[in-house]
Image (cartoon, rainbow, N blue to C red; front, side):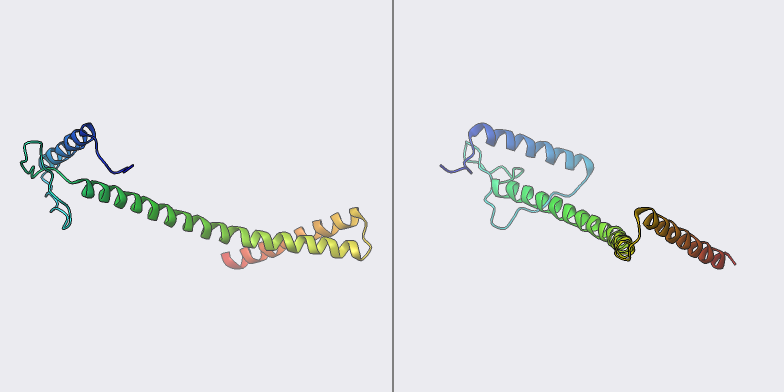
Length: 140
């Protein structure tokens, strides 16, 4: 079974769509694209060549080009999201690893859970002091 065979109804619908597109382009003053090199001109049932109709090859090629453009756009967008995620997640991951290792070091040194909480609170206060010092130096 050949999936690329067009029924007469599909062919008529495609021709109608192409004629509508051509009329819209002519109304907008856009130039008509030259036919593809390997595309055969469309032939009507009377055997006449219809100069305004596109071939099946041109139609499928245009669809593939549109799909490729959408896929490239999605890839660029996904790459930007991955880059942004790495910029945000790597520092957050490093901070989480540091806090976990700090807490585990306190536990290995014999600290109780309340003492670990006190150490983490003191670490947060020291970090806040560093940020305040940097901000004061930046403003002056």
